Image (cartoon, rainbow, N blue to C red; front, side, top):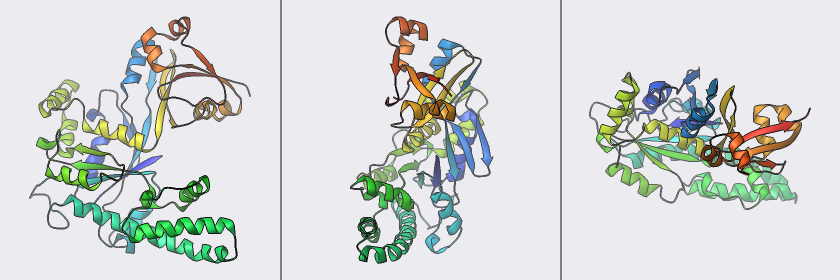
Amino acid sequence: MKAGIVGLPNVGKSTLFNCLSNAKAQSANFPFCTIEPNIGVVNVPDPRINKLEELVKPERVQMATVDIVDIAGLVKGASKGEGLGNQFLGNIRECNAIIHVLRCFDNDNIVHVDGNVNPIRDKETIDIELQLKDLETVEKRLEKVNRAAKTGNKEAQTEKALLDRIREALLQAKSARTIVPQSNDEEVLMESFQLITAKPVLYVCNVDENSAVNGNKYVDQVRELVKDEDAEVIILSVGAEADITELESYEERQVFLEDMGLTEPGASVLIRAAYKLLKQQTYFTAGVKEVRAWTINIGATAPQAAGVIHTDFEKGFIRAEVISYEDYVQYGSEAKAKEAGKFKVEGKEYIVKDGDVMHFRFNV
């Protein structure tokens, strides 16, 4: 699961990506490694794993991760191949969610591609290019499905009806995510279309340092614009985040944050938001060898969660032994939680909850 950082050139995308790439921006044990030039695997900051480490004292700790992709800046005409348009659109299609960075700061030394700072116009520029590309995809698919629909094929008729609704929305400059599937069949179809504007989006307002806590007039404009989108807006001073990464010690970074009125780096907030945007959650395994956070989809069953560790765990699943994170911390250990009756045995139908501390029994 990957979240792609998008935006116009010179809005702070690459600086943000570089902030995420620097372990010092987060905490002492917050590693990041580059897999490809524009893809990073970033640990998800989670104070719960620090508490479990404190209680269990394991040999090693493994945090949950999220993939962040730095995608080339988009310009007007990208849907027709302008600039790096085709590469940009291909990269974003491979992502599962979009982190849309908007420039919300004034600085005469940083040129804006359209001449002046206007996050509303910038957002619309990117939205229109993505919508035009999706419209092209939808119309090509409609050409194929129309013929089958006319013959009375019910599956084709269902697909045509959904495509028609999406096309109408796109023509009205609305994204595909505004179309809500009306049935399971439509949900499956919507997924199969792989439309760019159907992906969930998170808006990052890149502000000056003085606006990092409360935002500014540009942030207010963005919030008003996206209020009906069911999308989160995060305020981040990317320049200040970059300065934080240059500081050598954790104590220095904390003093810098306190001077800004922040309790943690904005990058940490962003990473957690991206994890949530991808509809991911965490369960833990806790033993003396290792305390580890495992990433699963929200709604995953116990066997599916076991399969994240190893496919054999899912195939031969017998049961899951579960203690909630809150109970584990309250009683201080697995043994004491068991004594207090907070140890549960769950079967194949159990839906894993965020923060469950789990142990699996299986047979292969």
